[in-house]
Length: 124
Image 1 (cartoon, helix red, strand yellow):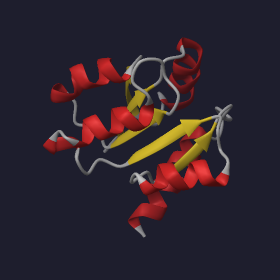
Image 2 (cartoon, rainbow, N blue to C red):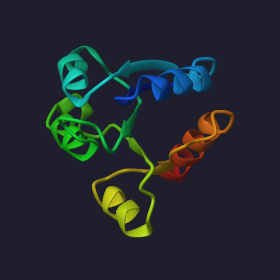
Image 3 (cartoon, helix red, strand yellow):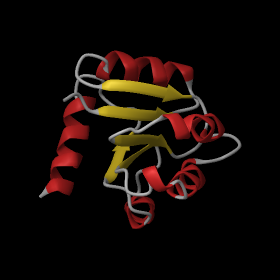
């Protein structure tokens, strides 16, 4: 079974790089904003949410809080992506229920492995 990832990211370049990095091993749905993700959420049943932290309008943590209100997404694992990877900031994101944080800029050749590693830790 191919893992379905919902990737929410406002930067088109980052969406494109992530798509290139993940399209062979995962099924990917991308949204350009928290609002778009919430609008499409009823039709989506991702296995993982990959979520940018800093976005205009609705930021990543707020988007996650809103997605968690939907019963079918209440327990979906989430990984944040951000350039702000200071330990305190990562702890705050993990306290929201995130499996972990992937730092930006990310290595496209390792992104899939980083996701699998974080998912593996959650299964252990």
